Length: 213
Image (cartoon, rainbow, N blue to C red; front, side, top):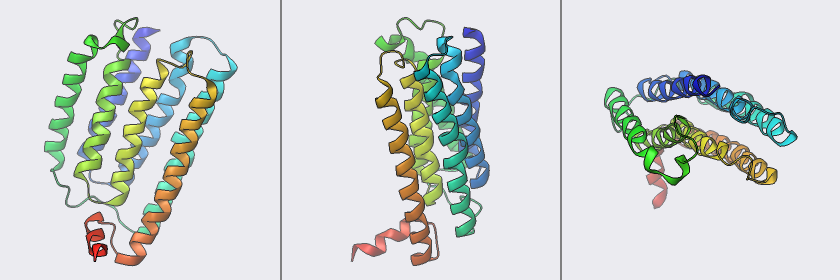
């Protein structure tokens, strides 16, 4: 089972690099939706039993990460009528190189972390670190508001992977609270995205500096 989980986590790492290397925002949204669905079913594979808490966390994660949030973002994308991230702060290929370097560093240092004890041979910790770093790269190098939202989602996926290590010890209410915060956050961001587009006829967050006056 551990090898199967590691194979799934390798797919998640490849999705991170794909998200960094494509300019088509809809493709990135679809990738994050698939990534969220895969991560949503991981609790069942990792823990090997079907308690109420794990099943509920799985269902909520799959529905929110794989269906509701991606559909909200796709609708916002259609409303704003944009398709690509045209002028990222760092080019697509350099972003992929940085993401690959971050992934290698995560693989090298994860074994030294206390959280990795008891999970020898598992890619959970390095995948969590690499995914959070990927989200941070997207947040800081993309100018389109929706691309930054995707970066936030990828960052949250990394945090979610860390949470899988603590699912047995973490109260169910905490896990559900994180999911609710994520949903409310994306809902509010989608509204803001539409407001930005109406006010500036653009999704470029650099236009927001005109409000400082």
